[in-house]
Image 1 (cartoon, one colour):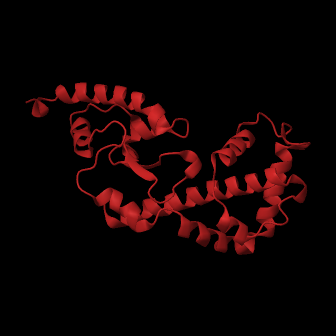
Image 2: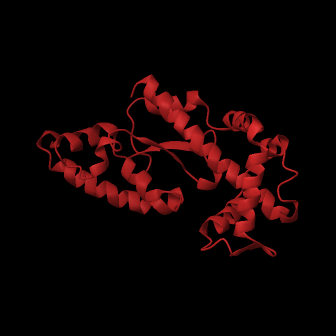
Image 3: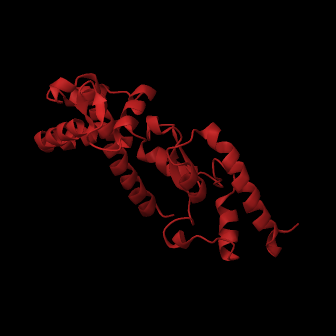
Length: 214
């Protein structure tokens, strides 16, 4: 990838990382003091916020609720939470740039992100197949996904634990197939047996390519 392409990927990462991190922050604040309706939230509070597993569990509860009528905390519903967040975002629209700047300062630095894509031979952190080996599979017609036009030819950035987000030293590179299968569902340790199974299939396909045979 060119430097421009890496930079574009980084900007997209910042955008989605900020959206999720802010939502996690606001959900956590509301859970702790629903009666306040997020009226007391400040950029200083956002800067001091540190995600935890507990906060992530609370966030998932709101995201997984089957309806806005589901109780979220005390007598307040998921719908109450969403209305409070929408109201806060309207009130804080003029200051949103400040929140984005804070997140950018706490997120994975662009230099670290770029280093992931420029440091030697790249292998998927989970299945360990290299980018060069995927290129061989693609050239030999051994890759079946219809998404190849947009995903699969280069590696993707994955945050190892979803509740930590794209924090410094917490982002790794993996292939599209591992990234797509792991999602936010599995920890790296939980996912490793799946990655090992994927690796066996890739190795079998690689062994079938004449140019890769010993």
